Length: 126
Image (cartoon, rainbow, N blue to C red; front, top):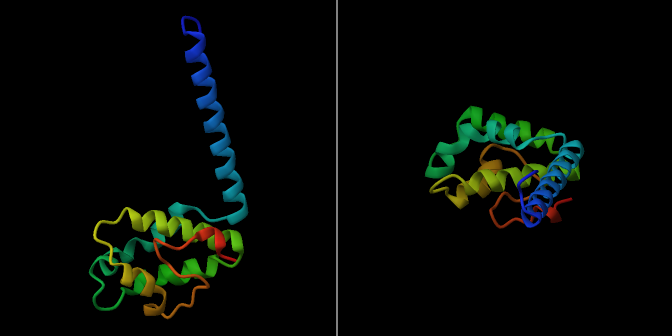
């Protein structure tokens, strides 16, 4: 770090430490949940058309993804992880129909132990 001021060195060290802590938190969350947001998003991608239109029935491959996620979400950490990933994913979908989101499990004949909603506090899920 030659040529960098003491103030800038401190900023770099604080940023590096913050990145380290974040990566450790992600690894702990992943170890506890054994499910990644990539898996959740991949399983739910076939549902985007239904979730934006809110009309008709979800496609069979959409319901297959919902059923797969329900089967994976068998512990508190995995349910919380799925919830957080769903909230993150749905917040990125333009014009998502919130009624279609919350009604998706029922439309697929799946009973989830938590409500899918952008307002759900995932940390309260057991």
